[in-house]
Length: 147
Image (cartoon, rainbow, N blue to C red; front, side):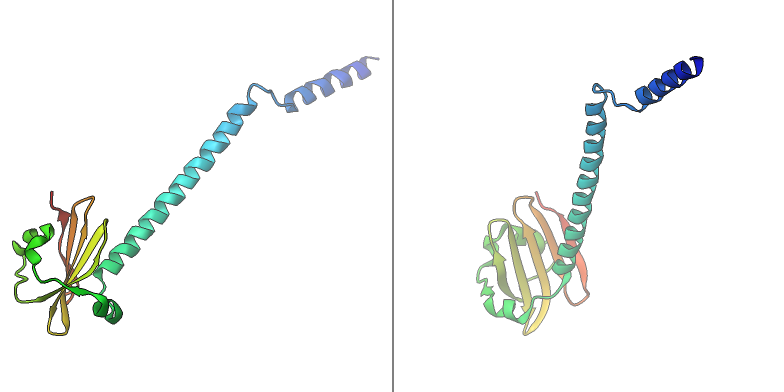
């Protein structure tokens, strides 16, 4: 009889230890959700970083022939706020200017010496961030906010 009672108590003890407490169940789910959320946010951050790196690589690249053909000539560059800032660092008066894109978020301009692409400007309007790229030397001349 003592053996049966001992087996019964031991079984009850083991089963009680293996059971889940309903009060703790949401906590475990929350930590799992937090873990998933942090993994998802780190994945989003890394993809954002990759996208920014790709964007910077595309900023440094020359304009394609197709884009150059579709680019509009810029006759009066003084009307573009970012170019007054660029003129302080780089003399653009000797170059032919073209507007590659001008949308509500970004303006990309190209400066040519004959058929040779010399400078490219990328202006992010809502951040007022300007990049000026020397396409001959393949380096950034300006990469800063112009507020």
